[in-house]
Image 1 (spheres, rainbow, N blue to C red):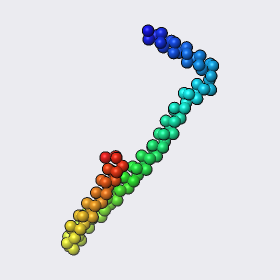
Image 2: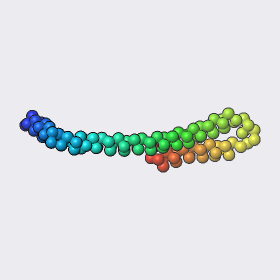
Image 3: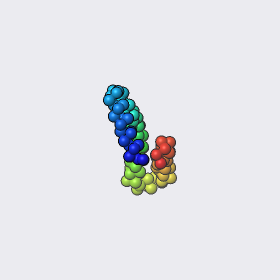
Image 4: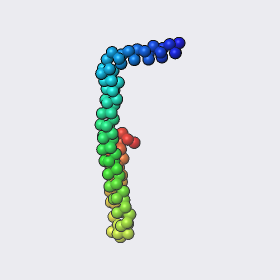
Length: 104
């Protein structure tokens, strides 16, 4: 039964290709081209989102590094709570951005 179905499909597709080759090629390549265009657009969107996410994370890490390197100065001026709030705010912004983009 399967052999019969496969043979008849092969014959029909060969006959259609002989009768209308341009239409057959167009029919076969149109979905591929459409998927390519959609894929490129989606890839650009994802790349843009990932770059923004990476930038926000880099800013938060940079702030943490700066604050950790100057911890003696902060302790000297008794500003630990203010710096901790600022650092928490930076990481919170990264977390919110990830949630907004749906990539968490």
